[in-house]
Length: 287
Ligand code: SIN
Image (cartoon, rainbow, N blue to C red; front, side, top):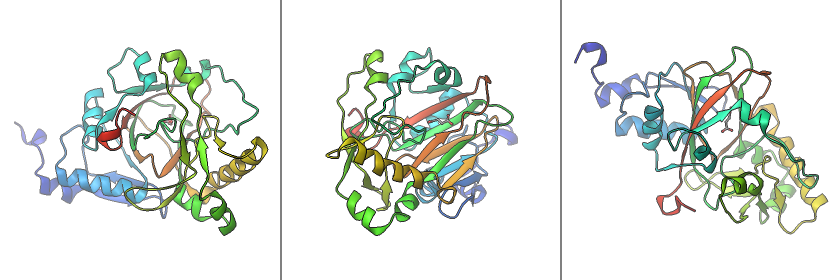
């Protein structure tokens, strides 16, 4: 083996790892690691700690194959194959997120819900996936950024009376219109609007605005009014970090702690991303 491709020792891997925060509580850029090579347990633990602390981390200039992306993600838990991923002639569990799918999708406006692009992944599931590794395959030179929101900071910014009001409320997400045509039968489940993060203990304001959210037990107008307030807090620039993709960029986020929004301002450019989802506790991987 030549010196150029010799694997780093675990000690070298850790010594080379640099974590640079991008915003006070949200987002960090990690350098000094090659995600195409096997990472040591210590490096994995340091990256996991950074994901928990910063909610989303970014890597630049990574030349990854599909398998290498999946192998890296699999160091952090069992992988989950999204039902939409099966549509593609692609290696499961890689999920191609292509601009063409969004342009072609028939959006059925639902006047009873608040529609927006801010979302978490798989919130229609009883146990949503905990993490995601997203890789830029084809990105426009300008535009096509992704925004993440610190959903704990969004919660902290709520008036105390609203925090108290939301405490016992649950939200449903209805994704059946997308899942049923794929042959995926799934019941509607509800989650707390304010979830407690299993690992950090933080309170997380947790709504998916792409999947017809409704707050249980409230009439439509009241639910909509509360959801609009939550959306207002998601949209505050103080709660956000925005990432401009380049070929080889990779993002890894904690889906339980951050919500995200893909900015679609690149016209007809065939933007293509590949995402791998990481299931939560193995016990619940299939729920
Ligand atoms: C996603 O919603 O998981 C993908 C975000 C993006 O395409 O930027």
